[in-house]
Length: 409
Image 1: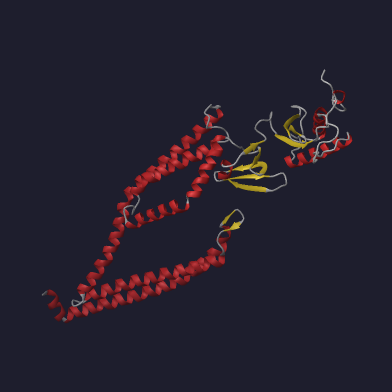
Image 2: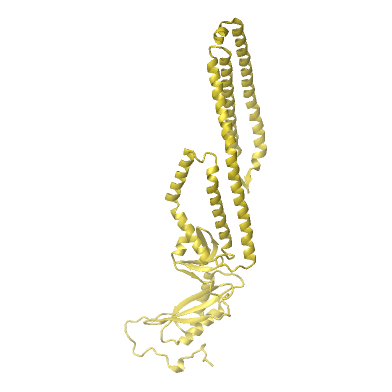
């Protein structure tokens, strides 16, 4: 009834028209200010980008280029400008409609709708504060535990603990594993307190991540497990000379997924840890006295050459090779008595004062073996023949100790 009377009252209608006119003028003035403000902000951004974008670096790498940042900021400013214009237009329309009795209900609905949205956003933000506080507290406690654990590991290492799985080689990996475990536990504990954790969007994201991990991460998990096996069993360590399958070299990096080996020819081989756990690994550094590695080679000489002479020549060749130690002394083993020749294996320890790759030491050793055998008239060739010779291939006792072999005293 009151609105009907107001609609028939000329004074009330003129008042509503005046309010609408003032609102329209204020709206036009604010839109003009937003447009002018956008021009001023553009100039300010260009000046700031010129002076500050060059400082956004990681090392010597430029993270953001000016040609990419300026258009992005300009588009962002345009989007903010249109958002403000639309918001002002919405409020202007609600004020104008609320001024007249015939359209007042529409204006009030517009106002109520806008205030409901703003109130809902503010209410959600306020309601999320307790959960965020609990999640932050969980993460802070996890961080404190990780700090305590790191210091505990360091004290155990300096104290010389006798725990088998904790050594200077495994301590960094153990610390990372415990840290990852604590963080995963903290995330699982804090997840229900995160805003939107019970929404369908979060549930769908969790299902997606689970599918990605189950379908695509099986090989990664296998490589990680193989890396832990290699680390904690101590099969190989950084600095050791090893042979893995058909490859040999010095271990330069031992990772959780791959291991890097540098060969004597200067090549760097990156091998999956699953290959190491699935192949026979020879460690030439583990059984030596002190630092260094084992050097070995095999020759086959006919039965007509005294074995004592062969052993003496092999040891002489090892003594001539730079980098092969005299203590412990090189040793020769007869590893097989084949149909036509014995197999002799020379084993020595190399720890050069000037580090040399194992391939270089073997190269010099093979050259010295050829020189020594040539000096003493012994041919390095396995005697293959189709039938037995007329005279048996025997060595008389008087010829058991030709030079440089010496009789045992």
